[in-house]
Image (spheres, rainbow, N blue to C red):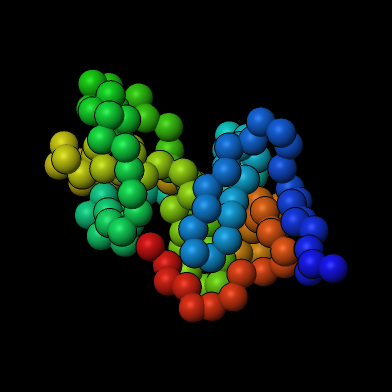
Length: 135
């Protein structure tokens, strides 16, 4: 008999967009909906600081080129979540790359505080184990 385990997925609907990193998986669709509804504060941040913290995250060059055709004020705010004492960018890596290339100084982002992060976590077989590093 093989050791099969059930994959547990929570906090998501069939068409939800997810973001995965070393720390966990996040429901971006739900986070964006709640941010737009005013459930989380919006802050202004320096592009360079966020860019340096996210440089290890991969991106699609074609998406960045398409974003460069828009004006920065047309971008949706980015979304970050605080989890495990670190801030994780869960939505907006391509926009951040485009703003960096343009030389923009600041941007807007929603920050989901650690106390409010649970509804956006999607867990597979419990929690992922360290080591992990924030981007």
